[in-house]
Length: 346
Image 1 (cartoon, rainbow, N blue to C red):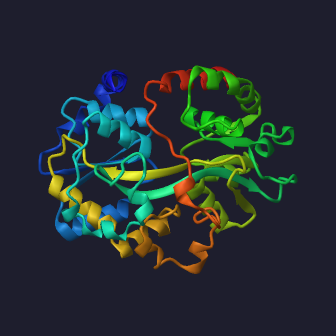
Image 2: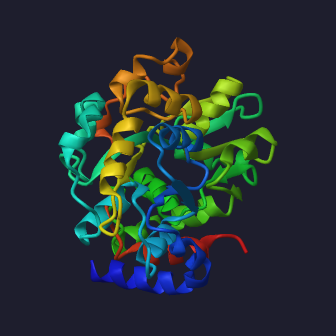
């Protein structure tokens, strides 16, 4: 984890001026740090109004920025939202508080399989908030070939009309799956094996977009792409011409989780907010706004038939216990990023 700590320190220095104002908030302010574009602002504000909590919600746009903000001098976030492998890295590095489950009784609403996940078995440091899958979405009115796997996405027919996430690890993981390799084995040998495949794929990509892939497809900039299932669910709900496929070669499940940094000043309020977000009615509101796979089984009971039948939100026959997930590879992140960047079209 020394490499992770060094990376965090360097990133913190790079964004220090941006963070100065954010780190001078008064001690009575409850500070939340969330991924941009995925913030349930109205729901968090509802908690603030009900409890009289003075809230400050900040966002980050990448895992690197999250780590930088957490390591900045004077940073004292009370609750963060982060993905599975980042939670794992922070917990290993001693940067998260262990949760008091007695203060979060609504954990009982979480499906048991989501409390046994490898990045935080037993939910010692984090609470599963939402989940989803990397998969394929396409416009059935413009894509004429059958789509079952990655090879169909990167078919020559789709060159220049393909959308992928602007995230090197996500792209590389798809190539590993296509080659029959584990998504977390980013060894030099495995990266060498998938380099020709990545080179072929990336020459055909038309758009890289991680923040708003839905609009890329709606605006006609792409016909097919590898996107997260919550974005695909929005597309399908708006127009069923946008079809969703879990790749035949395999897929990754991601879990968005809530955790309390060691530097938090308001641990009790953080656990109270976690408990609020795990209420069935709150979980229903979350699914209304963010149609991913909700780990909250009691909230799922409140969803409409249309929501439950959305193939991207709740794929038929899915067994989440068999899904692959990212684990912490902080010592390999730089190599993966450099490889993918080098293969992109200028």
